[in-house]
Length: 165
Image (cartoon, rainbow, N blue to C red):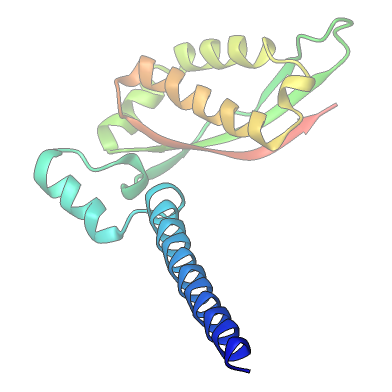
């Protein structure tokens, strides 16, 4: 009987040690998961973003600015498909930073139309079919317009009408 009590006490010590190790591992996994989430997946705090713009930037990011919306004419182009039977009708509005950029938008209207017609006619149906492709097109338009008007004049581009046939 004395031998059985010794074996049971030894089993209890091993069982308690096992639960302590499991608890420590779970705490470490939780801390590692929290660290990974905050470093890689969580959006930065608004306070940190405002501190960054106050400290080193004379220009806040384009997402924080709001400008004036200016409509562009509707574009109707043939897409660059092999048989040339697909068309794109695209209506756009651009958000300009200030009134000087709005004036430049009307001043360089011929350059803007030429640039956007060349860009749009180089696209294919497959190159415009997904949402990712449409977002990339919007960014390409912003980049091209900023090359013409000066860097940072165009904040965003909004697609108001899009028909692919």
